[in-house]
Image 1 (cartoon, one colour):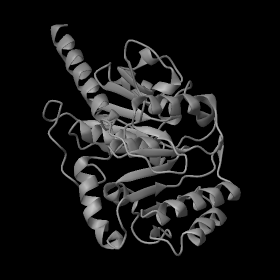
Image 2: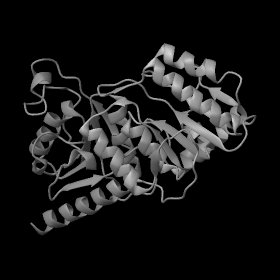
Image 3: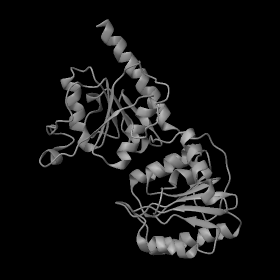
Image 4: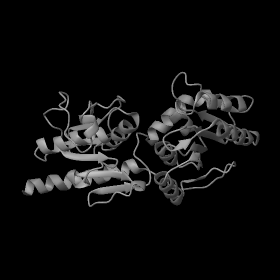
Length: 330
């Protein structure tokens, strides 16, 4: 079963296909594996692994730590993501005699040829005959979910004028910094947009920082703005569904990619710091036409929504069918 409780969409794979999704439990990995499984029309069984040293240290190159939940019967399809999942994916492929079709999302850090299919973001520069790269990452968003969440949160934002702007705030991570000074500048830019008639729907995250969040809330307190205080249901997808435009900080590949799924203009706030990999990602998504750097003003443009999830699901289904056809010939 998926963790949404929703029935799967029409399956791209044969009826009765069994599927496991396997991660270390991190939300980002789980969103990706579940999104792809659901796009395939499957109701996967969730497997979470948490290896102890020395197995943890040796991943992804070493052996899998014995885990009683990762045991036969092996699934027809395995979708795994994250460094700790790689030893298990190799083990399942081997112990199933190659019958399990193994899919890895993200760079496995080992030879991609060890698996049936690998997806990696284009900025990782991973290549191989069984590797698919896209500018953005897979996720669990669908048109139906956006519409449903937008309807659910309509009463909370009904007082806000149009254009309504979803403001997705990440925060400090390994390569970017959201300082109090940056928060103050962003707050002033947002206030100026609100003064020109826009309604703001702001969602800080756990990484935003308490002081930074307070700065934003204080700056926008007398503006047509709703800043989520962290209580109640998370309005993230509801705000995306309600938005006429999106402003998003650059520190999360997933947030930028989900914003680009909406088809609404995506304005990217580039924070202090960065890395060559993030630079490649930002340059790639700007090149698609979905996003532009945020320069303190709302802009309007049109682009084809980005949907890596469907592209990945189509590629898996085609390779899965080809492998099954080849095995029958053998």
